[in-house]
Image (cartoon, rainbow, N blue to C red; front, side):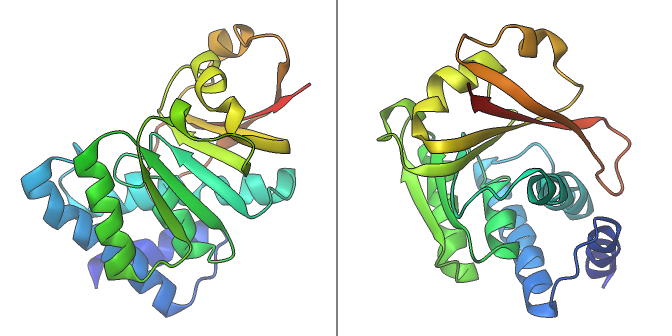
Length: 211
């Protein structure tokens, strides 16, 4: 009940009113991640309460910004997805999104596939491989969480975007230096401060688009 209440209060703080079944899936993901983490070391966070804050609520904190900035379309990719973050929580909360998880480490892709099966996430596709090898032009939005410097993110994942698509980079402190080093042809559309319930750490979402 403790985790359920923590999640419910965090979702309310984000302005997200989710049905009980969806909240149950989010907690099911945390339980599965905790179980696999004991053997496969998928995340440095061991405590399930911290997972709710630093994985679930952190991942979902982008939704208010994305929904306000512009409709991002339904074809999403999460690059360098790791244990499926932020892609799996987003796919649970937004079943209308087609979410592709791209991850080069085999054990992490294996976990993603198991999560897809156990949580019944038909809107997830798992791609085990390097992001630069994935065919381009397919996605309306590409998101990353602590994946790479912005210039590298653009270089490695920019080709994935369909026309008018956008890159969404989840960062800690506002990366002013990184934003100044973007390659020609790309611009920062927004640098939005994120609010993560239960965390005092600074978080930002950088929205990038072609110019």
